[in-house]
Length: 275
View 1 (cartoon, one colour):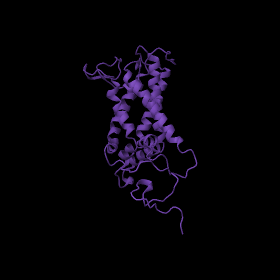
View 2 (cartoon, one colour):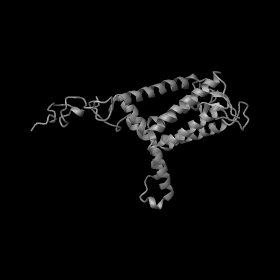
View 3 (tube, helix red, strand yellow):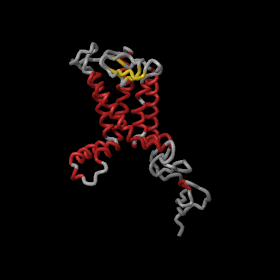
View 4 (cartoon, one colour):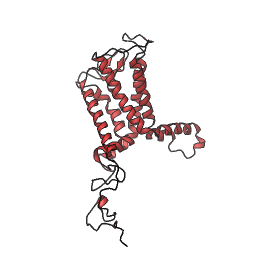
């Protein structure tokens, strides 16, 4: 008895229209607005890309004592603005004429670009691979991450170590926000709260990484023989359940923190002080 979904007889067809796949005329059978989620994802990522690109190449208004933008920290070039007690490490001499942000953003960018969640997000949002669950992708063939350039996604575990180092530097920057504009300790402003929220989200996102979960509890045959690592693995697993939320929250917080420093540096308003 014919069911209407017999294999397609088309010769040479590939992908979802291959001869071994069900012959469903419609591209999909979903009736909801399945396109909304990937469209919002693409819009959000494009907005961040546009903003971060502008700020990275601006090479200005990234420091207002005692606050330094996370886009420019640590500042590794000689052309960095002098930051009293800040993360100034003049590794690159006067020959570096571009924005110092380009020297450091490659590490958090590489970490996020190869992140398991972000891969899903921009694969769906930009490449429609696949557009959504139960929706056929338009590509005729699929090679996954087995060929160049996507095979480079496997270096995510190494970017994790750099991300931890960057998070440590940003933690140091956050500690410096307990100074006033004259570098005296024991003060706190609204910017301090902004930096505290940002570093908290950055650490939560970094530690929720799948690579971190594997480093903490991977390659163990008996958890009972490693109670400390098992406990840490459980904690990281709890964070990992919220990896998507932390990915977006930390992405937004980084942009908000940079914007806050920019507004202070351009004189848009004065940093409110609590004590």
